[in-house]
Length: 315
Length: 254
Image (cartoon, rainbow over all chains, first blue to last red; front, side, top):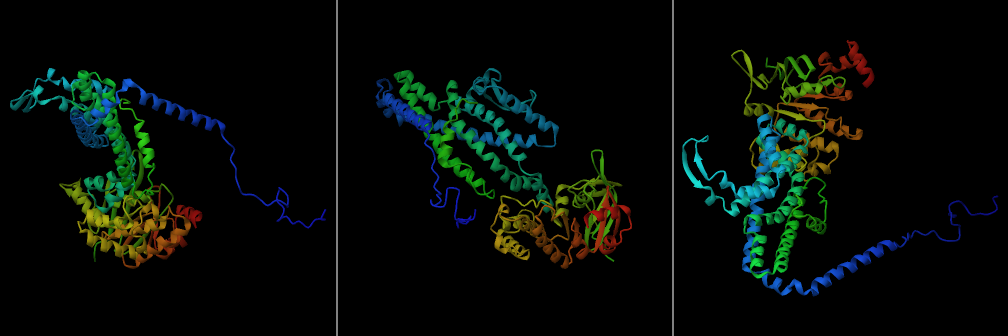
């Protein structure tokens, strides 16, 4: 006791001689390395089989990738997606405002709409719109309840494959969008409306200048997902001759029997569209997160990867 | 003699079966600073919210600057005012909330500009200049470009006061303006309010800050269970309360 002069400051638990180390060494993880190696092997093997498989006809893929017919179909797919999303968002906002309204009738109407269009398959709705002429052979403008009509049109002339597709996709989308918009509206602190009202703002201005901009932060990410999902969902309209990307690919392979090659052509275009849309979504989200810490919840690369994992038929 | 700035007559308000205000009569002269104190649930905030018609009373009347708030008298009954006329009344009554309620998607400067642009219809450049002056007045000129999330609670509340003042109100309502603040931030907000009181603004302040009530307040109102129990000069009410309930409350907070 008390024979050494080593003070408590100089002696660590390891002893006074060895200097303290701050280096942290992690153990090897053999399981992870094995799994990574296996994954790489499977990927390389898959790539190799695809590349050398003579049944895939890569020359046909290359020949058709920028074919005029394919590009026409691509353009229809883009038009259908954008148009039905725009109409869907407008419908969604209107229906969401009905859902949060004070009027029970408006709320009931909105609820019935969402219930019906979310409760039946989109495919059934599309076929229904395509065959609408079976129920209403003529569409007219005039007094309701069988009153006199100003003008009438043949339904079949009016509702082409494209129009039926647009009706089906946008009305269905409106039902989903209304739920997204409603969630966004409800996420805004009611105190915001009070503060704006206390300043003397009108209801319309409170909604437009205070509530909706804040709700957008909640609304934009799932809407981006809906848009990307819609890019792929449009392929459903091939059953009603919608002239979209998949329809024209099918028309081509029914004549030249290059089924797989043309499906690959279509798939490559779908991948391109989804990737481009994901980049747009990233910048849109960054724009609407102003004032909320300014951080984007995701990296650009992560977002693209995540969106590609969504399946077009997942709904 | 001019009309009082605020006059409440037999004001009653219930939420469902719970009666929160049970007949409030209150007169506040121009330029007075009135502090309203009382236990939680006594109806203080509800009273304040009836004054700018954020809450619709069941019965009774509120006059601000001689004008009946929220209703017009026609054929012996009170009818709700049109939205446009109610908005004009609210324009001239500023309100500061316990939880600030700044617009999170707008910078401090834009928050102060919001009423000028969206309600008064003032051009952006003009509004910007006036908003900057007001931020300077509450000591936040250097925080103009910050979003509310980047400001401390005390700074947010000062922006909220500037936002209300931008509307050039004749009456300012403060609903527990310092209750959501960390103790060390209370002083800066009270200092801004004291400056405002010195300009002759009529202020009604629901608060637990007895020091502020004593020092800045001209009049103190003690409420309990939806009624005004006692009122008078702050030093008298705080120093020599006449009512048992006032004494019981003050013994807990002083």
